[in-house]
Length: 284
View 1 (cartoon, rainbow, N blue to C red):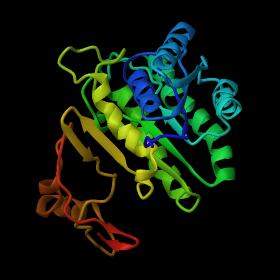
View 2 (cartoon, one colour):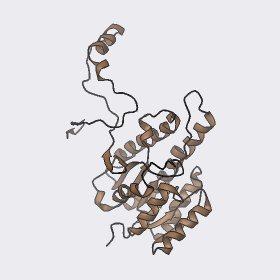
View 3 (cartoon, rainbow, N blue to C red):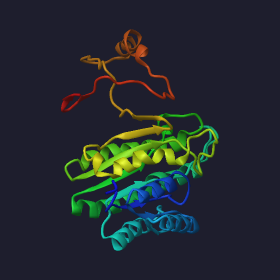
View 4 (cartoon, rainbow, N blue to C red):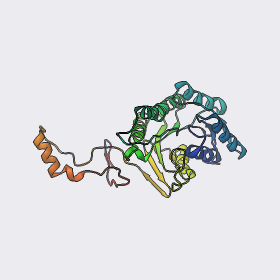
């Protein structure tokens, strides 16, 4: 039996690029797929391609900026396949520019698709998932959310995606619903650099998170970049946490001079290692 046999999955922005790779791979692994894209012809062409390969797929074009269009995706999945077991929030747009040249309209457009569209789809999927007591939501974020030159506005939207992932996972921890994110690198409509890995290289991480084999994984951001696989760090206070009964400008300055300045992390960090994590449940 295939790992995704019996799964019913909605994938947004799946008419092309990395989203299309997720859709093809999910169908090949046995899932029934709702292919969404804002371009109707792309959604239908991808669904037809999957069907010709022996998979089950239905096109549901729509603009996820509309709550009703987002809800229609979930309703179509249930109507066609009887349930929704997975949602891949992949649809996104990007506009690159420096802080002083970025346009408010571009930023607003990215927020509407990358954050609000994801929110609409996620909220619509959560209702049936909570009723059935299971499901997997995968939000597609980006390494740009760590802060990359000319991608500040786009990265900010993907930082919001990461934050939503952490929060939703915590809220849903006892519900049977897992919420994770994937930070992919590959050829797409947004990234069309011949030096990037093929879109298909990112699919295995998504397939794993859609499958029951990831039943213990939630609240994580999985980074996949060609041959490299890792977890991205959650934002947290960096140890040591200094104590003072009453901080003043001078004592804060002393704290930086003596300790904190040496602990600064550079911007645009690709990788650093965390060897011990302190949580409310102890260290692990």
